[in-house]
Length: 116
Image (cartoon, rainbow, N blue to C red):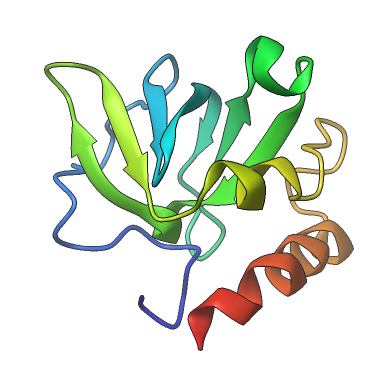
């Protein structure tokens, strides 16, 4: 994975300006939910995944660098995380997701071990 997991990988099929909200999210071990929100900020890109009833409606942030493939026809985003890794991620905080450095650091600390 690229060292900056806050930016889209080049080989995923993602096109700048593409809105991923509403796309299904496929973890390495099955479907996990839908993209509720997509932010494409420079060096802070992320999706918020609504896990629906699978984790009782939890919303989880995922850096866009976890996306390995985007299928615009079937509206599916494939990520390189398992359901458990997503389930255990910090919860998405709508009040802090834009521009809160401390919140972004918390998310980075969670995902950083997978960069090794």
